[in-house]
Image 1: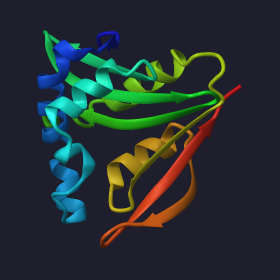
Image 2 (image 1 turned 90 degrees about the vertical axis):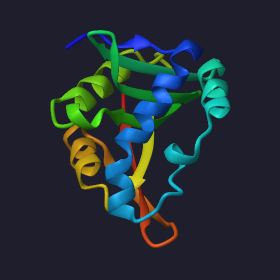
Image 3 (image 1 turned 60 degrees about the horizontal axis):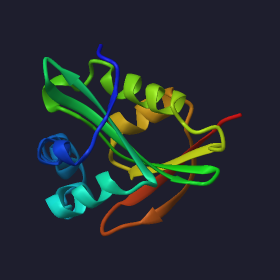
Length: 154
């Protein structure tokens, strides 16, 4: 597997396409087209990619972007968002490898990573549990709950 690379505005279009393709399984599971990764616009994504408080990592295979994750840095807390893997590459370990690489690249002041996913997101919930994330609570959404998870470091 290729080493993760930092993504920037030049990657925005390809990243948005990857993000939308990767979340089709979540749309099916949660019966909602209003999931934030699907309604995010290209301009919004470009703004995130230029935000100095957000680090976005990606994995390319033969030049193609196949996985990505972003982390918003807030002092001792990192907020993980948009872990995505191309549908034809899901289950190949890219999500795990990317999360581990992102964790290894955290600034030393980050002591906890937090994230959330839908309660019906079976694959992501298994992945996060394998990586050592523990549930800290749930909040209601339209017709499902968001599961909040965290992992402590140092």
